[in-house]
Image (cartoon, rainbow, N blue to C red; front, top):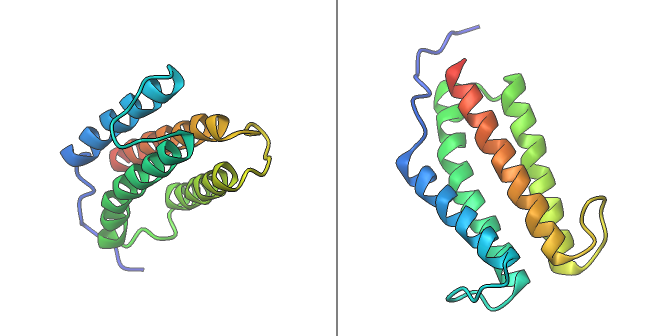
Length: 127
């Protein structure tokens, strides 16, 4: 097995900015505030999904560069990503899942899963 010496580095500043935007989006939606370009809960869920997707793309590039596809933390990240996809679909298509029986609840679950992936990414970089 070839050892990789590619540094996973620190979190990308763009990801930090996107995380702040995502947090403000979720807080705004949950408080019932009017958000420019966001016409409702489904639009907010879509925006949150896209923000999370972009954040993930920065992390997965570092995993790919380091060749850590089968690392246990990477696998946990894949599972969290699949759950994000599932709960986003549930919010868009109005089907019930545990913890999310509405679009608004899907927003909360997706936001929590994104936070989980962000924490996992930080742990992955520290190891």
